[in-house]
Image (cartoon, helix red, strand yellow):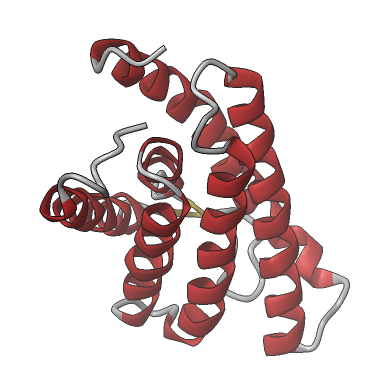
Length: 173
């Protein structure tokens, strides 16, 4: 973990801003999933910088990057109705991933993977219920889970090796 909060609050602020911007940009490059009925089910890589922030900086920074980066994407896109849901769902996802992976956990890639999967399960369930609330269809909302699951899978496959490389280069175990 880049533990800069105590010694370098300006660095932590800058890194949090950078990961928030990366989350926004990576979310902008999105592909609607086939069969998406109600405008949900996007495939994008915005979850990757969010998870990286959670694992390297901590839960607060990761939650902020996800909530603000993806919430801002929703506000500035045709998906504005999703913004309040995204803000809460992604913020809690960052909290889950950051807390489960833990600040003292630096060698345990399995724990990081479990944290991403647990946060991903929350995200999939959260968007399912958000879609049910928005559109009132409890059955058809299942179709859009594919895009959410693809985001979790891509975050797992791409984030863990990146975090491992950065930890080694930073001299962390």
